[in-house]
Image 1 (tube, rainbow, N blue to C red):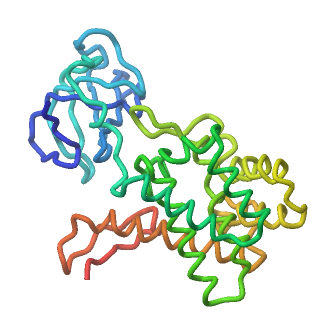
Image 2: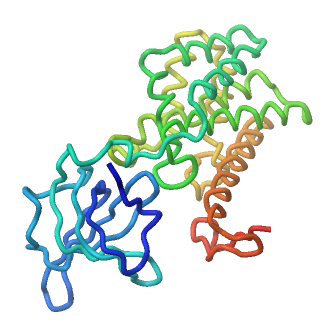
Length: 312
């Protein structure tokens, strides 16, 4: 089966294809009439769509968020962005689309990523800390989801296996920092392993990547700390070591503005923050510059404080 991916949309193009509904909102115009505002997605990205006639004839029954719909319409442009003007929409026939169209996959085999994570944990010399990492990786409650969870809903590592890929990069970065500075490598490697594990609970991945209610109300920093506590208690980690690990996790966003309840106050906590920031930024740079010609730049990027990135 063929599919027109969102990343290939061109203004003026007519479409008749299947997309996942990431968001659906009923709105009203100034004159009081209603329309439907949508965000549609597939594995290449998201696009806004508008159904001007809220009582539009549909393909079969009505549709909701996190469902696949068949969309007939035209690719238009609004406020400088591609937008779909929908002419007909409704629940998609499951025999007409493939699940692989909707969720982006890891560019690197997840088995290879996990093998390297296991190797780094095995290199931890402190027996208790090594057992802490191995207990998590061998957990039937967490390990399967850790392998497949996305690293984010929208931004860095937003693909299946993205959480494991990001975790490995942060672990490697911290390992390198330990060769330059007087850091507790064993503690930092294990803190790196646990730093984002709460994203398994914060996000869900079915047809779209989406925040859970717990993710919205609590957030992955606190959830990660709570998961860590399960294992530090079962393994019998010394209270002062467990406290340091918790501080590393809670402070790794580096600023109150970015959700950390505490700022990094130890060498290891600061190292984890730097490693996490570096990997997330480089992955975001790669994604933003992917389709930018040499010598050209992106438009200002809001989530990067409005800067433009140059492909030099």
